[in-house]
Amino acid sequence: MNNLSIDIGYKSINHFGEPLCGDTVAVAQQANGDKIVVLADGLRSGVKASILSTLTSKIISTMMAEGMPLEECVHTIAATLPISSEYDVAYSTFTIMHIKDNEELELIQYENPRVILIRDFAATDYEMVEHVIDGKKIYRSEIKLQENDIFIAMSDGCPGANSELSYNKEWTEADIASFMETIAPVGYPAKTLATILVEECNKLYKGKPIDDATACILRVIKRVQVNLLFGPPANREDCDRMMSLFFSKAGKHIICGGTTASIAADYLGKPIKTNRVNPSLGGPPMSEIEGVELVTEGIVTIDHVVKNARDYLANDEGFAEWSVSHDAASLVSRTLFEEATDINFFVGRAVNPAHQEADMPLNFSVKMNMIEELSASLEKMGKRVKVSYF
Image (tube, rainbow, N blue to C red; front, top):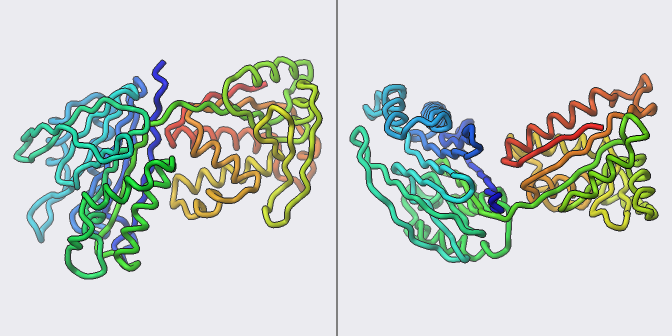
């Protein structure tokens, strides 16, 4: 199996005073597991731009995911997009990034800023072949992927960002490439890189962007496996089998739940050391077991992780907090969202009597729903997820 994986992250800021963003990023998956990432920029900004870019990104990503040729996608967009009465054009620019078997990237670019490739921590040129489809000049590239490659796609609100109603000649695509070169070696996840770039643009706009600005970043990384154990098995006789399978997996190991941690400690023949509660961290206390990277409380911690995942995929308002905090839920969130590419959940079906009291809404079905929602969210982030129940 290819040992490479693609970390995908994006961030947008709206034109100042506009409730909706005129840029849209859509991610779709083909039947073979290949991914299609589309960044579309609708004409001008606001509601109409948002509709144009949403239609464009959804049409292209859906059609390409079904294996339709690019020419057919462009024909469909031209026939579908409403015509602007002001400009007499149906206008949305787009960038398509087609990830093939995590080995090759097909880049298709139409009138967005050119995608920047940072390879070996330096901006690198790549070949672009011009195609004309329905009168539109479209550029296509085929690039073999290497570990640590970073691809930066942008809407035109990023280059030229400034506080005046004029183009900032000191913030060109080349300047953005130089800016990103300086932070590439740090190893930030794609989401963080996109956030850093867009926040820099926002700073140049002095917090009042005169255009929507979006960055969508792909980062080529090695596969990283993380294994999470949550809850004891329904049948106590399955404890050894569950622990044997869990600890036989390569990668990091996370255990959530007090009873679960006790079973794991007995299996390993290691003591549990419970850390004192640090009020500044918030949340329940964590523990330590030799050979386990992270030991936390169970259902409350996972509930917070589920909420962080929900937020991460929506407006991402909590990112600034969980991305740096050291409470249990933040540590688990960072490990799953930012480090892991492949995640194995080992979920025990045992019912905790303490959770069945009338005043405790966290019952068994809620626990199962948490894992289902978290798994679905992680898959939307591009992770490979496997859930095993015991």
